[in-house]
Image 1 (spheres, one colour):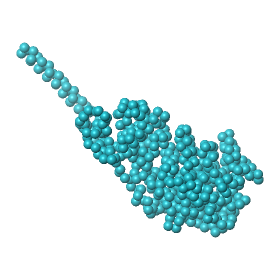
Image 2 (spheres, one colour):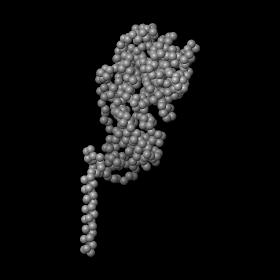
Image 3 (cartoon, one colour):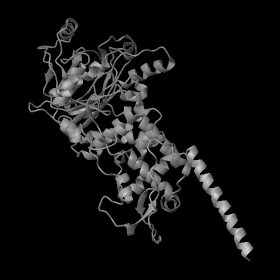
Image 4 (cartoon, one colour):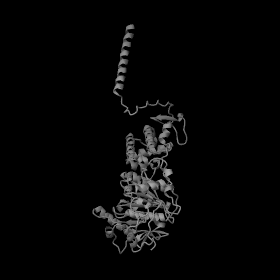
Length: 503
């Protein structure tokens, strides 16, 4: 049996070879199963298959194991046995072209984005703002856009938030109420983002999505691996980033309809983080992107433990399904098993609900789209072994690949691009540098003058604070000032008596 065809990816063997059709791979997919049942290996063999067919891949590496795709697999008896069991001929070991990424810049090239590109809704979710606070943040984004103040990093957003607070009464007439309490809450949440190292994500150079869609000279697709083991300690940042990336792909890629193979395949691991506590507006956005991004030639594969983690409106769009074993110790787990079984096209020869509880590691129920897009009958399938390494790369191996990457020169150093903070401080705008006559002062920032405002000179600069000082008066300073006031008062009294005597 051939491991692959020119039109499909060999995934495993049931009563027949299970092939994921390339022309239907942009119809999205769902990979579910309990911890330790083989989801990561399934992701790995699919990524290998797409790469062999010239399709770039982007995948999050939650446990670090997926990094092994960059190294040649090592012959092991259980791999050879599995290859024989699925009748995989000419089973070979090979490495796949890989680029490593890391929002924190530690285990891959840094990924950065201008904070303004997230938009108020995504940023509000990242900051866990309520509806009123999100409204104030939306006003800040609108003011920045209207007054050409680039939002590059957290410092820029703080500057614009301060501007909005200073001009609250004026802006409320145009954009709606600006609550000082909400402004304070937003500033405090920005401090929390600092603590979570989110500021490392906001900056320049921004990620060019074309760099995720590269192929090698021999035609293989690049596998982009996002180091997400540390990122998972800040799950809101993880899910917000991946949704931002999906949105960027959706907004920037041209319409291609249904190509013979995808332009890019996107694997979203721990997908439940995307939907947990998501407001209605965000869920609608996720549904819209998932539904429409297929026309851009992008396939999205959600990976999660429980199929109930994915809302029905999104789940209904995921045509290619791989279901690993589930446990059923609680009522919710029992509902998940029943729901998973019912989503498959029934097989008269297979009790899907019972099979989900009996599957061994490396086994799954599989149903891929076929023909004109209808799902195949569900089959109990033995998943093929990967050709790349099972398990993570060593630190030395990872560093060697990162240092040899052609993208290192582009992304490994941050650009110090002027944003809203610098523009307000220096009186510059993106389109030029207007003179002082066009500005007034708000704290330390110069801002566009309100219509009819009087011409006021800028306030004198504040005296510099002593190095390392707390800003409080020392005992000597307080005593000196008190003594000066006392002497001044005494001198005034003496002068008053002298004048009265002369009268």
